[in-house]
Amino acid sequence: MKASRARLKKPMADTVRNYTASVSYDQRLAPYDIEGSIAHAKMLAKREIISNKESAQLIEGLERIADEIERGVFLFDEEREDVHLNIEARLIELVGDLGGKLHTARSRNDQIALDMRLFTKDAIKDVLEALHDLRGRILDKAESHQETIIPGYTHLQRGQPILLAHHLLAYAQMFERDSERFRETLRRTDVMPLGSGALAGVPYPIDREFVANELGFRAVSANSIDAVSDRDFVIEFHAAASVAMMHLSRLAEELVLWSSEEFSFAEMDDSYATGSSIMPQKKNPDVAELARSRTGRVYGNLTAALTMMKGLPLAYNRDLQEDKQPLFSSVDVVTSSLQVMGEVLATLHFQTERMRHAAEEGFSLATDIADYLVKRGIPFREAHGIVGEVVQFALERGISLADLDLDQYRGFSEVFDKEVLEITVESALKARSETGGTAPEAVSRELMKAKKRLREE
Image (cartoon, rainbow, N blue to C red; front, side, top):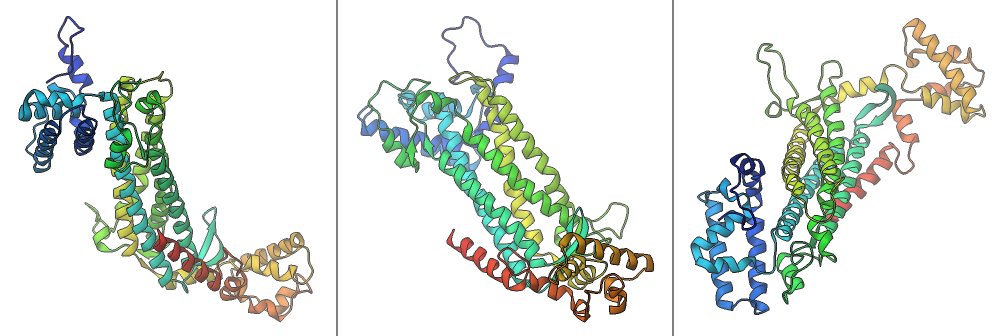
């Protein structure tokens, strides 16, 4: 069975057939196409458009096709253009001309819109599951490192001491927002388009709400033109996936940096690292590097989807055939990347002593010394300048702030007293106890809240 050419006098050119065929990739939608067709067959019988016997025969044939596809014995034929015609042709082989009745009250336009929404709903649920797992692994790591001190960075320069748990909770917040974005996308995807026909609706007494309930949709589409030509939900998936991959890429970048000898903050488990083909000493963070790189693929898919849609007049246009490959790509990349990076993080070993040493060395307590002066009445800008001079003094002598004695401090301001010598990374952490701060008590509170939110999801 091929697409109808009754209006056309010449056979399709082979180059056109090859160029327009989509079955090589849209066959991935076959389970959803069959699921939608079964619900449609039930509805046609319910509304007495076909008989109950005919409906049962159609459903039996569809279920047999589903089994053939699952067992890998179904032969997709590119001569039959797309997944819909392949399934319909096989159905006619199984049940005879009755198979042609299944297309009553629907078009390939609303059929593919349905398949895409069913596929995207499942894809979002898979991504949400992967995000949930990743967030759980991050929270587990944070919980086990509530006392691990690391340097916090701005401009990739050491800034202030923070808790490793606080740093990890920053990623937990990012991925929690990603979960929210995907849930919102799911709500807008969860609208059933079948029954819209080619663009104007169908002239049959169908029951769209019945089909929606059979397929687990929360609502039916309100406008037939919009329903067959809308791919907003696909674009939203790409957008949410792009943000999630951006967050994952930031995490991957830090793991690459932290596992380098220059940082030596973390070591990846051997099962999640690779070696070098020529340098036997190497242990490469390839998984993190690939996650970082594949982010660009998802960005490209978002751009492709936006570009595809930007100039399309209503309603359906063949351009919409190009929505599938980018979507499949983004689904595969974001799901696999979240899963494998969660495993990398779960098996990651942090070099806690090295992290603490990095937090203590240098001048990471300079801000706290400035705040110390402010609490004694000196305006912050003036205090900032005084401490800057202290830092320069130490730099010129090749020493750290911890090496200075009180007399040296008082050479820059009489306000300094012995309490300046009691400023440590622990005191710096403890001072930042407000909500969102890096104090142990604040981090513990936020960790508990994050775990509670995760459980409630």
